[in-house]
Image (cartoon, rainbow, N blue to C red; front, side):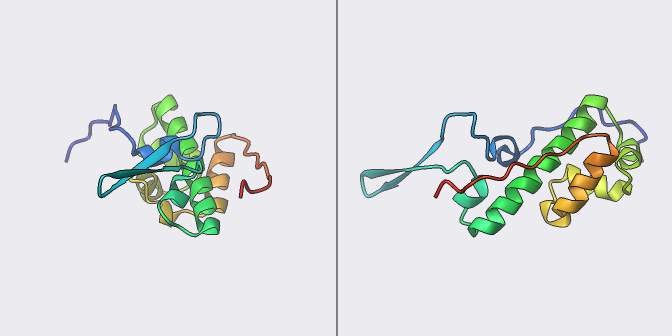
Length: 131
């Protein structure tokens, strides 16, 4: 078994990077049906675009953003999984789940607690739905 540390990371899936940012231009999806093109504006939540119910899509989007924040901390500080586990007060397998984008294994509460252990303040902004 190799004892070398993982230096670089492979590219993360686009779902976490682009999910939900309202600062960027709205994306559009194109569908071609028998020679015609139908353009559907994206709503800013990739999970809603994938067909998840609205409440679940919002929950997934929030978890995705928190997981991204955790991964950025790990990358910026160049932490090993063991070091990250100590910083976030979780076990190393939890960091492995985070690394492998296992979003279903994390609750909002757990992710907020992990960020708090790293000294990161999490703020929630509540607003009306665009629909």
